[in-house]
Amino acid sequence: MDTTPPGPEHPGKILRTAFKAFGISVEEAARRSGVDGNTLRKIVYGERRISAMVSLRMERLTGISALYLLRKQSELDLHILRPQMEKDLSLTRRADIPHMKDPI
Image (cartoon, rainbow, N blue to C red; front, side):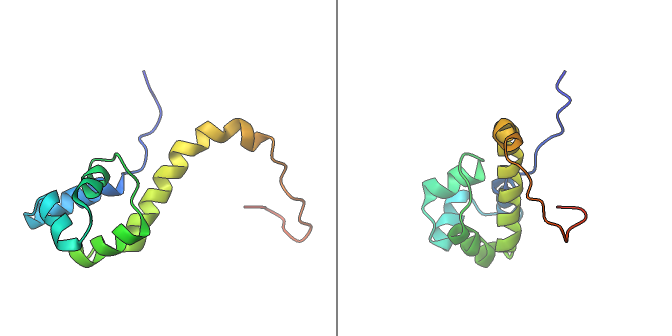
């Protein structure tokens, strides 16, 4: 049984929910925002990362903050990469900074 907590939500799922609430299709959202339809479809179905450009266009279209969408993407990226990089990260020595008691 997998006990790994679920990962962060892909920003595409957030957009898919918004499109549904507004009663528009992915194709209509792409047309209205000027984003390539195939690109937006891949984002909405979690097959592609959202870029800053697309997040700004989606902010304009839906009112969902571009920064929020990009933060969700970054959270997801870190969730995926952290386990993959664990060995490499363990080889990195933390800097000894005398004026800091508890490094971040």
